[in-house]
Amino acid sequence: MILISGRGSNMEAIQKACVAEGWPASVVAVISNRPQAGGLAWAQAQGIAAVGLDHRAHADRAAFDAALAEEIDRHQPDLVVLAGFMRILTPEFVARYAGRLLNIHPSLLPSFGGLHTHERALQAGCKFAGATVHFVTPELDHGPIVIQAAVPVRQGDTPDTLAERILRCEHVIYPRAVRWFVEDRLEVDAAGVVRHLDGAEQWLFDPR
Image: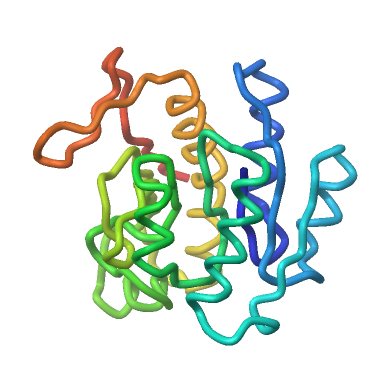
């Protein structure tokens, strides 16, 4: 199950990798809180159930999350993947899917949680920036880290140029993390550290 709010480029990357690599899983549905999101049409064209669930039609965040959970549970997914889903989730929703809710964030967490990550990295003078796949917890943009990718920050970079290079890495690490989950190759220790059972590298560096 994948949740999106826009064009869903990470959703596409996950679906394409799932098919090409023959994962022991399939994407059962895609849900967007924006019924006009471009990613829904793409999912539908792949034969995937695509659902628009407008958050504006609900009285508050809790009401929307309850409706979203009801729709998710209709499909009985083993994993819920947030792929550019631009909604802050209630603690009750997060608890419902604890341990099977993944997110990708465009920074090297725990640095730069929240919005405008690329601008903030540039303003801080960071020499590297990147993206993080993590399990979702009630605290925004926290939770056990599954895999990270890093790129160098170049002289003259803008938020857009940096975002473009980081997104390219996202399309590699997010499918990788999802595949590890569906193949049951991840464990979270008592300290909240995620380890791959076969010792696979949980990082990617792209110098381009």
